[in-house]
Amino acid sequence: MVSICNQFAAFYQGWFHINSSDTHTSNPGASTTSILPISDSSSDSPVQHIDSQLVACHQCDLLLKKSAIPQGGVAKCPRCASSLYHNKKDSLNRALALALTGLVFFVPANTLPILSMSMIGREQEGIILSGALQLAKTGFVGVGALVFLFAIMIPAIQLFLIVVVLLCIKLNAGLSVAINLFKLQVKLRPWSMVEIYLLGTLLTCLKLMDDAEVTFGSGFYALVGLLLMSLLSAISLDTSQVWRKLDRNLYD
Amino acid sequence: MNTDVNANTNARDQQLAVCHLCHKLNHHTDHDIPKDYKSICSRCGQEVDYLKKYSLQKTWAYLIAGFILLIPANLFPITSVTELGDKDADTIYSGIVRLIDHQFYFIATLIFIASIIVPVFKITSMIYLLMAVHFQWLKGKRQRLFLFRFVEFIGRWSMLDIFVMAVLLAMVNMGNIALVEAEIGVTFFAAVVILTMLAAESFDSRLIWQDEKSAEVTGK
Ligand SMILES: [Zn+2]
Ligand SMILES: [Zn+2]
Image 1 (cartoon, protein in one colour):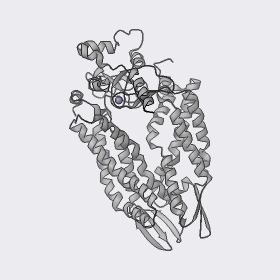
Image 2 (cartoon, helix red, strand yellow):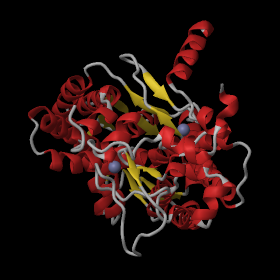
Image 3 (tube, chains in turn yellow, red):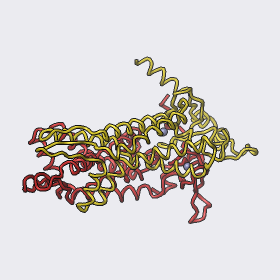
Image 4 (cartoon, chains in turn green, red):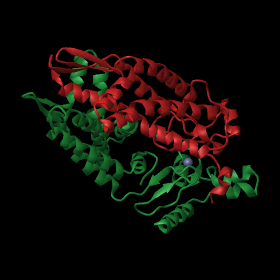
């Protein structure tokens, strides 16, 4: 296992030729031109030129030369180890299929009970919305809205946005709209919390089990399905590839 | 091979700014631009700069607001349980104690981590990261970036307690026999979670790697 890791490490380091080698030898001014031959490019737009040759780490700003990586590989920043870009197999088709499947779970996850419970001869069922509404009814409209948004709406909107953006790319239509939609998709990423909601449901179930008979409803399983599909589509979606396809300055 | 890392070129040394949203490289200059001119990403239209605009100020603002609200979030009750006419209100802390009393050790541990450890750890870590930027500490940049990524990752999990409550509210709703209600503390706590998440989001990790030369240019 260790040897495999070492091989990988050597592999990654080989992909990046660190610019410092030129910076050391001559004065900084001369090395600038050797790294960035922007002034010589008269035919191509400079923006296109830089972007196809160089990449900067968005976490630490290190400038690197781009190099090809094998399928399934990932290019990592040698300084801070954050991933720069991937080369995922059949990324767009897989992500599209998975996101569409995830959307199928949206309606049952919302309408079917998450938990059902029988206590002192009474039956009680709860859906996601009923918890949020109960919060709103007792005066906590903001918190209720947040629960509903984070638990189901934002994850579902994200899947929907992936579907729309990828279809736009496939049909090569409405790309300027797709850019804005994909921006929204990226911005929403930290606010999707299905997994936390599911853990919350699990804990509630454990808590109630002492006094009552509690069972997971079909809504719970639909929500698990939605979570799995969004995770899988996020894993298979090659974000940098989507951006490249959306870029008006590139034709690939 | 990692030894000559310090000699590496940053994108901003080449007058390039990476878009924090779509990661495209854009040309950018510090000088000769009109005051209200915004330089935007040629691909996605997001504003680009060497660092996110007002990153430090925004992060401090969100963080201080979050820290202040953490006090009422912990002092005021967040839930109340009415059982056979008796109403019992619980703060975050007393709720955990009650869980332990009822031998729900697993749940108590998770809620303790998500509601108490995570917010406190997050706020102190962010303050440490901001201090490191202000005083330009040079050592441990890599560790600080890992710390930042960890803080970014764990922040959302503080919502756990609120989700548990939302599900309980939907389930235990039987009038006078058994009723769970939210109390004012929950609003403060939700605000703390959101504000600390916004603080992490407005912090630009490139600040960690900023060297003295570029720090002078930004004036920070
Ligand atoms: Zn990096
Ligand atoms: Zn951009």
